[in-house]
Image (tube, rainbow over all chains, first blue to last red; front, side, top):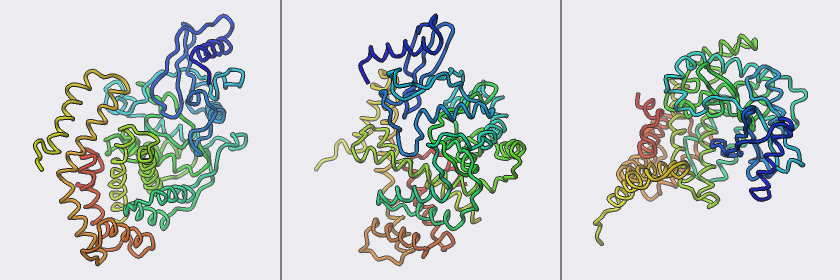
Length: 331
Length: 124
C-alpha cells in the first residue's frame, strides 16, 4: 500500500476528515501490542484517537476465524449501544481513504498488560471488583440481539470447535496422548448446547483495558462468533490466562462466584461454577493446539523467530493443566 | 573426540553473553527476543540434564501400560497409546493411565517451564 509519505498523507487527510477542517494531525505513532493488526495513535491537542488497520494496509483477514475489521467496527458499535464498555468508533475506513481496511476509534486510557494489572498496587482496588465487572460486561455482550449483527459472524458451538481443533491437531501427526485423552473425555461429557449468543471469543487480560477503577473497555473483537455463552466465561478461567495467579480462577484476579453472581443477576441465568468446567477444559485444549500452530509457523520456515520456536515448549503447560482438570473431574 | 568445552559449557557461555553483554544494549522488540532466546537456552540446559532419565521413566511406563516390548521405539509406543485412547480402549478410568501421563508431563514441564503455576498445582 504505497510508500511512507502516501501513508502519512492518508493519515493527515483522515484526521481532518473525521475531526473537522480546523483540526490537523500533530503526532502519530505505531503502538506495540496487537500482533495481527496494526495499531496507530493519532492525535493533536484536542483529539486523541486510535487507528486499527490490516497489516500494511491490506484488506485480508488474518485467518478464517477472524471476522475482518469492518465487521469488528460494527460489533463494537452494537456492544456500545448495549452498554458494554468499548471505545467509540469514529470512522470506518473507506476505499478513498487509501489506507486499506480498518477503523478509527477514540483512545481509551488504561493498562492492558496482565502483569502490572495483577501485581501493581495502583490496581489493588480494581482487582477486588473486576470479576463482577467482567460478569456484567459478559452478560451485556451475551444479551445483544442477534438480528442486525454482521453476517460475517459464524456459528461455532463446543462440538464444532472440538471437531475443528481435532482436525488441526491430527494434521500435525504428532501424537500427544494427553490431548487424545482430553478429546475423548470432552466428547463423552459434552453438555447440552445452549441457545447461541454473541460470543466475544477472546475475553481475557491482554484484551481488556483496565484502570484503577476496573474495567474501562473490552477490546479486540476479531474472534467474535455466535456460540455458547459459557465459552467466554471459561476462556477467562483458563490457567494460561491467570498469568501465574492460579488461585484466582477468573483471570488471575477474581473468584468465579463473584463473576457468576453478577452475570446471573443481569441475564437471569443460573450458571454455577460446575457449568464452566467442561468449557475450561476445552479452552485449555484450544490454547495448547494454538501453541502447536504457532510453533508450526517456525517449523515450516514461515516465521523463523526464536519466539515462535520457543512457544512449542509451552504446549506442555496446557498438558499439565489438562491433567489437573481431568484429575479433578475424576476425583 | 574431545568435549572441552562441553555442549553445556558452550550453552552457558552463549547464555551469559546474551544476558550480560547483548541484552543491556538492546531495546524494544530485540530486547524481548533476547529474553526469549536466553530462556530457550535455559530450557536447552535442563533438557540436556533431565531428558535421559525422564525418557527412560516414560518408556518404562509405556511398556507397562501397553504390554510393550523393548524392540518398540518410544515414539511408536506413544503413537500406540494415542490410538488406544482414541478408540476408547483406554480411558481416564483405566488404572495407571492418568498417573503415567501425569508423571511424563510433569517431567516435560520441569524441562520446558519449571516455574509454571500448573506444575505447582500438579505437585500439591
